Every structure is written in C-alpha cells, then in structure tokens.
Image (cartoon, rainbow, N blue to C red; front, side):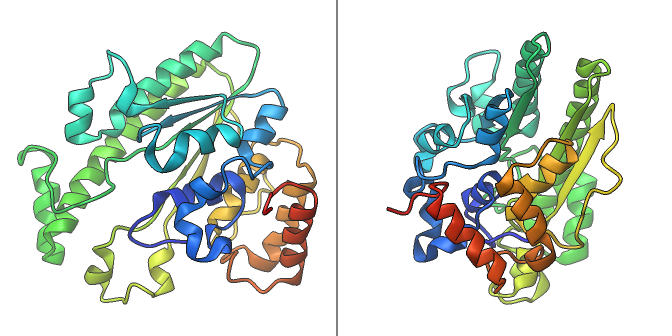
Length: 301
C-alpha cells in the first residue's frame, strides 16, 4: 500500500483510509487535517456504513484531545470512540503506559464485539494500535522476551533500533493471531471481514536501506483483507500497489456492500491512479474532487 507519509504522522494515513481523500491535497496543512477537516468531510467510510444501519465505533490508542481526534472521529460518523488513556479496569493502564501492547486493545475490542453480537444490527469496529510506533531506541520489554529475535535482527543489520522493532513486531504478530482466533470463536459462524494496514514505515528505515527520506519507496507499507466464515468476491480488484485513499472503497467491495456514486466513482478511478492517488494527473480524478466540493461532500468554505 502507498501512503502519504514516511517516518511519522499516522493520522494522515488514517485520514486517507477513512475519508478516501489524500491528506496531501491540503498542502502545507496536511499534518493538521484532523483539525482543519473536522465537520467538513461529509462522506466517509464510517458515515456511509452508519447510513446503512451499521453500528460504527472506534478503539483509539490515543486520548480524546490528541490532535482534535475526538471531534474529528465523531464528525465523520463514529457513534462511539473509546480511548486507551481513559479506559476503566480491567484495562491495565499502568501496563499500557509501559508497553502500549496491541493485546490490550484487542482484548477491549473483543468485549465490545461480544456486546454487539446479540444485536440484529451489523457492526463496524476500527482499532488503531500503537505498540510498534514511536521511538525504537527505547526498549519496552524485558531483555529476555523475544531475545533470539532481537539478537538475529541486530546481527543481520547492525541496527539496534531494528532489533527493538523486530521484537515489537513479533509481539504484534502473536497478539493479532490470538485476537483473530478469539474473534472467529466469538462470531460462531457469522461472516466478517478484517482489514489491516500499516500507517507508515519507521524513521530508521532510511538509514537501514541507504535511501534518502524523499524516496517514494519509503512510502510503501502493507494492507490485507481477510474473510471469516465467508469468501472474498472472486472479482475483487487488488492492484499490485494500492493507495491508502482507495482502501475504504476496496473494503466496501470486499464486504459486498452496495456502492453509492462516490464509492462507485472511486472504483472507476482505480484504473487511473490506484498506486499514487495524490500524484496522479488524472483529469477524471480532478473532476471528481470538484464534484465532491460542489455537492457539499467536502466543505472548503
């Protein structure tokens, strides 16, 4: 997957995924889209799903006042937002402050899902994790945890930061595998899809690869779409490189949900600018943006 940023600014990738817009469209203010666009984006993945009758919620690794995120999330259609910094017991806040472990957010998310499974209403739940984000010079686990993985990563690269990254990644993989298994059990045959993506590469990647920070290769991350108790559509379009702005469109198609005119247009635009949305000179894309503004889907006033 291609993202707008390298080495930081997770919220820009999150903005692109949730709204279908590139944060770079807002120029020098791209880092402040949660501030500038709160209440101004009237078409998003959460708002469309809410309009279809879904219960739409989010579990955030941040706090409500971080970069205006509470106001922004609610303005694009999330009905409920839970923040790690404010969760009550049994959420272990002291452990969270020390480790930011994915396992803790998954555990809370599973409880929320269990609460919803008895309802006739379908649900959409977004989870933003944090453990492998931030300063990899700081070790957040005891040295004996995943010690072989750390040793091998450092020996391979000579980079201590990569050793810390590899340990956190191993913990992330184990936490997700446990979450995936528990989710499937909880669903008890009900269908679901899980969409995962990377927000950006860590800043030390430039040193590790020898590439300058401006190199577009450093803007490549990953995405995955998995079906549980169902199968993905056989004709689901999956370009070799997908820009983050298209991930919400692909999610709608993967779930076999009807596409409104906005999502249908984005699907048609895949042929023009799937790999790098903002950089594309597609005339159809520019007309589409103008139509979004004129229809009041994006308020630039």
